[in-house]
Amino acid sequence: MPRLPRLDAGQGLERFRQQLANVDALPQLCVLGVVAGVLTGVLMVGFRSLLELGGLWLFPTGSPEAFEAMPPALRSLLPLAAVLLIGLWMWFTPQVGRQVGVVHVIDRLAYHQGRFPLRNWLTQWVVGLISVLGGLSAGREGPAIHLGAAASSGLGQRLRLPHNSLRVLVACGTAAGIAASFNTPIAGVIFAMEVVMMEYTIIGFMPVILASTMGAVVAQLVYGPDPAIGVPDLHLNSLLDLPWIIVSALVIGLLAGLFVRVSRLGPRLERLPMALRFLMAGGVVGAVAWWYPQVQGMGYDTLQATLSGSVAMDVLLAVAIGKLLLTAGTVACGIPVSIIGPVLVIGGAAGALCGMTGQWLLPIEASDPALYAMLGMAAMMGAVLQAPLAALMALLELTHNPNIILPGMLAVVVSCLTARQLCRCGGFFISVTRQGLHPLQQPLMQALSRVSVPAVMERRLVRTQRMVSRERARTLLESEPVWILIERSSDDKPVLALKAADLARWLTEQAAAEEKSAAEEAEAEEPAEKVELAKEMPEGDGEEKAAKKRKKGKEKAREKEEPPEVDLLEIPGVRLELAPIGLQATLSEAFNKLNDSMLDALYVEHGHRPKQKRISGIITRGAIERFYRVEN
Image (tube, rainbow, N blue to C red; front, side, top):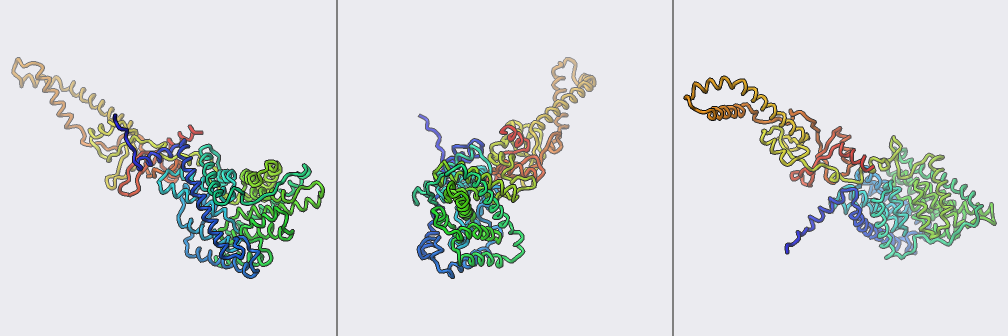
């Protein structure tokens, strides 16, 4: 019985890469989603463990959020020490290595196809840990997203996967990071698609769902099934609460607009030295922390106390206004802290204040301030990030109460509209182009980013020099290529592409023209040849010998007249100038390169060593446009 051929690991991985290049590589992407989810979950557990170790070392109670238990002088000096350490790290780090967090993830996804530098990843570990333990107003969600997305993408880069799969891995790492941080897998999925990917597709959803699930599973194995924030049983007492909920959401939307506007003062503050900006941020946080340590760190303990109704009104005001300005001001000063956790705490405090005011106005019908605190969390998150669906899913998963969705939808929509329309603020992480759309939101780029060039490129091609013989030209066409790549003789780099059909047509026309010319010459010379042959040959020789002699003479004449070589640059036909692109590139990369180079075709290189690269195919502007028309 014949044995089936066996694929070694290298061949199997190469086949896996080829499958990932296509738009319908759903099973392969789901496998990557599971791996990315587990990897991100492990990293998030490691990050939280380091925070807990730091809490055991720095804080009297061992909790990394117990700033209230520290002496006022010590907790006020902590932010100054934190900005000093972060400043020293930034000082010795190049400018491009200082970008971290969700903004960096979106930037790498939009302009670098999801490839992350290692030094930014290391910077995220340092800045994330120091900012939380050092008492700045910062969260752990931004580091979780960056660490998970970069590690997942790094795995894909290590395996040399196509760039379209790197994009999905980034979304998987993002979702798993949120899921592992809050134990909210659905919110992680929606956040990844709504805030980072900025699109909803079946191909993207399924692997991201698996990644978010695995990230939550890893976190639950270590920390248990409870969400990060314990929520009491909440419900809406009366529909009479709805008007006040609308008013509260309007106030929270204005606070969200204030947060975004203050955080975007960074370009104005860049004129100041970095040391002065960092000193300002640390000094102001330390001054407020002397009286209100609740503004420091992540603030989840304060949020938990807010939901249980054990926080004084002055503390709620300090958190709602002070923590808002401190967090936004820290970002404006150039310290890359995570804002997602603080935004939830700020929204909870602001919502609780609105709930207390509602109880004063409607002492009988008003709902519990804890309900308003939960609605405030969702409303603030939705307005600051302009991610209403992610905020609603987080609200649902944290409360495990579907009855809260009705007032939650109302609060989130009103706050998002207020921040967008009245305050003229887009999402915190989104910077729009002149056309009003972020690059990730443009439909053309979204569609082209899902597929790599191997799925569309033309593989039937041959390579040759500019000058070839007729016999060589006919040999080139024997394999029925679509394109002929014309190389420079100096470095064997193709510079032009010629349609093989144009060469075949020219050869046919030349052969027909030569046959016609030879026939005309034969007709004109035949009488003279007959007379000459009659003189040369003795009488009685047959016409057969005369015909053979004439044919032999014509063949010699044709061989003598046939040009020795054909110039492929002189043949009538369409020739396209070429530039190289990598085999892992997406169609969006190819399209952008065609536009930047003002060309109509690219040749696809395969290989990593410069002297050992081979050409796998050619991709034209027309092929990309046809793919987009068919898929859309």
